[in-house]
Length: 207
Image (cartoon, rainbow, N blue to C red; front, side):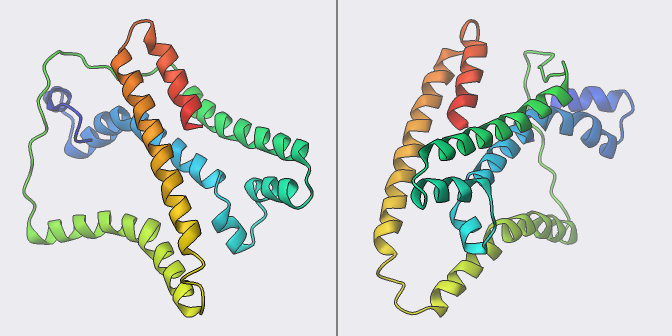
C-alpha cells in the first residue's frame, strides 16, 4: 500500500469516491498482485511444512512424503506425493490468475507521488496499533510462545537441539542468499524478452 501513488487516489476522489470506497475499489485492487504473491508464498510454506504437522499429529502430504521415504524406503511413492503437492500449489496459483482474468495493475502516468501521512488521534492510533499487532501476535507470537513453553517444560532438550538448530540456520542463510541473488539477476533483466521468462522463473524458484 505504501508503494502506491497518490495520483490514482486523487483521480478517484475527484470522481466522487468516499474514503472507504477509495480503499475497497482502488487501493485494494491495486494491491491484489502483492497480496496474491504473499498468500501463495504462505500457502507453499504451510503446505511444505513437516515439523509442525508431525508435532500436532496431522496426516499431511508432507508428512506422508517423509514417512514413505524414511520408514518404507519407497522413493517412487515419495516422488509421486511430492508431485501431487507441487500440482496442488500450482493449482492454487492458477485459480488466482484465472479469477483475476485479464485485469492488471498499470500506472496511468509517469508521475509518482507518495501518499501523505496522516497523524491519528491517540485513540485511533491505539486501535490501529492493536489491529496490526494482533496479526503478529496471532500468526507468530502465540505459536512461538507455545513452542518455547513446551521446550522449557521438558528437561534435557537444550543441548541436543543446538546442532539441528545451527544446521537449520545455515540452510536458511544459504537458501535465502541464493534466492536473493537469483532475484537480483532477474530484477536487472527488466522487461522486454525477460518479462514472461523472469516471471515464470520466479514462480518456479519460489515453488
